[in-house]
Length: 484
Image 1 (tube, rainbow, N blue to C red):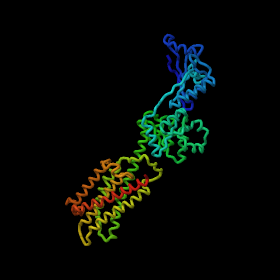
Image 2 (tube, rainbow, N blue to C red):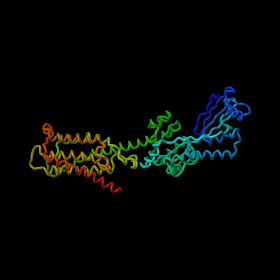
Image 3 (cartoon, rainbow, N blue to C red):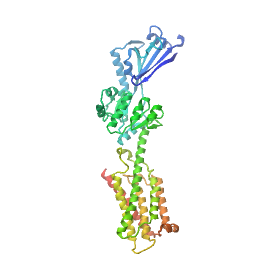
Image 4 (spheres, helix red, strand yellow):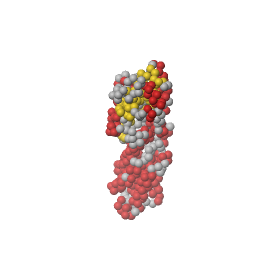
């Protein structure tokens, strides 16, 4: 009955769209109520009819009549206020309100969006996914400030923002208000206001620019062609993979395959975990190497011969920095990784805390290893001796204790679970077995110049090497008590 013959597409400035249809079919095919409605629209049955839908306030600007009961009436100020109140009531319930207008046309070329008849409105509930509320809370705990920039009604935006925990102050800035602000006023506003409604595409770009001028790192999500400039300008542009346009995907840095905001938060958590693991790996590697340096540096001052042979040093680096170091890189995220403040841009992997750890843990590792060898050393002995094997063993086992303690920067090994990183436990166990093989397998003894240790000597090595593990755990315990 109503073949579409023309269309005026949606535009973010107009906030509406219109379709033009040819009125066809026999009178007998048309429902009686529809025939009566068409006869009320015009004195003669129209050949074409235009339907317009969009934001209520946009339609009120171009409507001259309103459909009341079964006929159109002139649109006066009383009717406009009544419609606005009804629209606001729906918007306050979190609904997206859409108005509908109609206009009879003599031809398809007539101006469709002029002197319309407002026939009603309807509210659409588009509830956020259940996981979004939790994702917003995780963002706020992580020091990430979520903002809402939408084309919806301000009341709808305020309701959704309050429901999700984005903003509880009820402050909403509209596109019309943004239009009146200069850059300085906008820079001040974006530091406090988190919800923006009825925003035009160019205003999204202005908001991103203002946040960046305030030294903020901005991640922008979007799906439409009009979002492309803001996605391009943002430090991290995130496009929707399902509903997103090709233009938005090309402008973005990242594309979400599930169009889920919670995925963005999960990606932030994974990124923080990776960065933390890089720091753990660097700390472990440098502290272990520092321990070897201290051993080689301090031994001559004690009058000792060469404490470690070159091949032994290579072995320590191979078995301790190899598999355990790689396994440390897949350590699961710590429980409080999303409660830590973001790392400022430009901050490197090394910081004061890591530098301090390298110094004192490396020194402790070198001292306990060297002390073990020194106490077992017999001046004047030549060839492979037990003191050198004990020093060699304590240094290796101390590094295993070090890697276990460094799995978390705050929690103890027992809090995170000894077996929560099974590859690391397997790497530590393999290193332990390989070190025992170097000590007790005759062929390896000749290669590495080691001697078999007695049960008592091996127990001493195990006890002394645990000092590093205990010391790092004690430091973490003191830090936890200090920040409790």
